[in-house]
Amino acid sequence: MTEPSPVLGRRALGRALLARQHLLARTDLAPAALLHHLGGLQAQAAPQPPYLGLLSRLDGFTPDGLSTLLEQRAAVRIALQRGTIHLVTAEDCRTLRPLLQPVLDQVLTTTYGKRLAGLDLAALAAEARTLVEAEPRTFQQLGALLAAGRPDRDPAALAQAARCLLPLVQVPPRGLWGRTGPAAHTTAEAWLGRPFDPAPAAAPDALVLRYLAAFGPASAADLRKWSGLGGLAPVLKRLTPRLLTFRDERGRLLYDLPEAPRPDPDTPAPVRLVAPFDNLLLSHADRGRVLPEEYKERVMTVNGLVAGTLLVDGLVAGTWRLTGAAEVVVQPFGRLARAEREAAEAEARRVLAFAGGGGEGADGAVRIEEAG
Image (cartoon, rainbow, N blue to C red; front, side, top):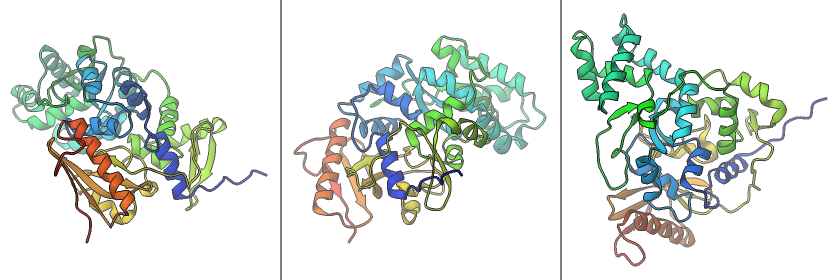
């Protein structure tokens, strides 16, 4: 008779997630190595979130640690998980985009299908490739050029079709810390100087195992939430002999790597400032392991914005924002204990020092707006 799967409560799941995200203890990994471990960082807002995401997890991290990767083409910004812009290593760009192409195909069909009905998409993709490889283009520029020969079509839909059909990367200075630039695109092949095979190099098994390493224990629904891909339950079933299985408090089946950390639920969790749009909050169907349901609407807006969050004892307990490089404003949802407030201030000063807007002794640079 098969033994029932052990039950993991929310606190246990939260501690496991924080350990794998290097939010229980910071790491000295190289930025590229951490990017790879995390499967990239969501980067739809430029440039701060990926930098702040690495800062919360890395010791000794400076802006140049990521900007240099982008300038040297060792990391890129490209549409991947959930069809959103992620900052990933160049090698992950090559391996993840083919695996996640069905997500972009779905976006193309559901969001732009009616506006593209009857269009020769292969011809559109070929023309778009020629245009962006001649010189990087913004979507506004690309849409106008594609619409010149298709005057009855919506330029914005044409540009978004190219985004879904081609592996388009955003080129610097977009995404560089302390610099601005339009979201101009070229193909991954042109930017990285290597052929790009549109067919997945392998089955999605490796993708599933990487997700569990960074976000497990998790369910098939969690995996879909993170990736946007459907049909991965059979992959988990196939991998089951290599995995451990658990149940959450609601009886849902969870999968995990045997060697992955699962700390004691009572392991202390330090106060942390988590970046806006961080995948910590976006990669599970049930976010309750870190985000209490009552706070969800205070963190995530209906139009898709995700605030930077304050973690206290492993759970979201407030929001925060960096105002330019001059001030960090922390807004707890309730009153903080003295030690928690001091830790939040220390984390905020760390952000300020990173951003060049202050540091130890900077008057007025950190503001804690505690609830009354």
